[in-house]
Length: 564
Image 1: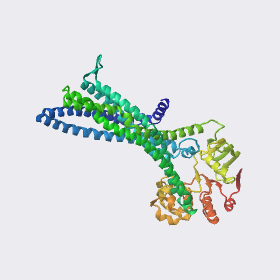
Image 2: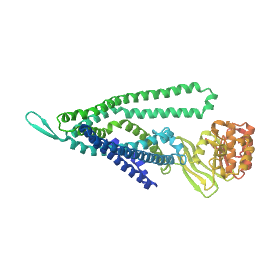
Image 3: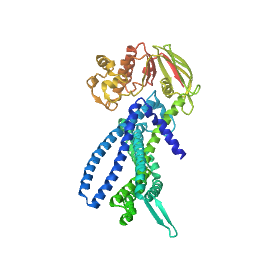
Image 4: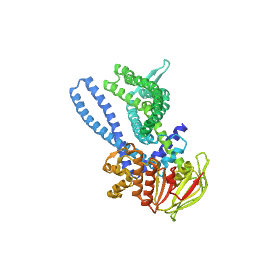
């Protein structure tokens, strides 16, 4: 019970502020309408039971006039019910989408901020496949939460309304115990309570394995999707080294996990379905059989018998909410736990970054046009130092080769970018001067080639003619005709073309500081030298830090910082 309470508190803390967000007036108005329409749905259900009683009484009395009255009433009830149900659906779905959108924005804001999406991969815990957690698990967490809250509220109203009706219809039944007679008031209510409590207890016990089975299935499904996406993104590399022989068995193993999880969930569902199907049949027959003797003895009319049966069914249906929603609750909880897993990892990451000195590298903004390393030590996650006591200053316009251990150089660049806070000391960064990182594989998002080249800026920020001229300078003039085409450029372009486009992006943005790591390693030595010289010529005032294994490029740099 304590675990369940803690789980609900964690979910409320994560998703509850939605009702206090900037659109709280609209959200609360929609919620109020949803409550009002739910009350209207209950009113319709009560009216239908009364209409049913009048109808069967009319049939028993063979009254044609009363029959026509009931026909007219059912038409009005029919129209009202359609209007209430349709409006309720629209408002509920709008609320579900709003909540999902708010929580998605919140989690993406935490995840896609200042490199957190990269840093969180180094935090231990259950937060793999963040894309699936954001896209699918948030949807289930919010949609199912509103569905479950609505049905629970509906069942509470149903229970309140039909308990009173059933109590009145039950009258008093005398139980003969031989030596004494015991009058029992509202016997149908007591029977409904015993019936539903027994069924709920049995159903809960039968359905306990479903939560674990559902959580396991969602995890293995996400792992399978992730592996497929990773293979698609690296299709060329796999094809070049004929890695299909490895990938196919890997996919089969992952799908085998899905089959096992599916079978586990199927067995759990099978037990629940067998119970639910028998329970639903018995629920239809039981109230009529219980009330039938009173009708046969002439104590109640046919209408009262049918109304009692319907009221009994409605009351049992309300009490059966835990059984009826066990599967949905299990799936909802599994998704919420996955969303909470990612949220907790991001919160833990923030705490890690916020730890006081000397446990983390400090990034300090300076009014000087200097990049400085002050007693900088960079550690691996296992606390082994890979860069020790670095004290260097790089001034604007300098060209510096980062030599020595390429792994350490990679960590240094990440530390400058704020993507590797593990270590000690400080890095002083020039304030209000842009830094541009050129990795071996420049990121080219799907869309028009023009927008992909100008990323992360908007294409309107650059003169189209300047862009075309820069394409020619970088040796990819053949791409000018494709500037307004939409495609997956990561897949459609050769590695050399992508690296040349990385230079085009650099020349368009004209940053003051450039950090380049094997940015032209797919070009031949002569082409690589041409690209670096072009960069130096066009951006003569920019400082350049370079990591490269190419001797001809290394020869262009007079200053070196050698890392162990």
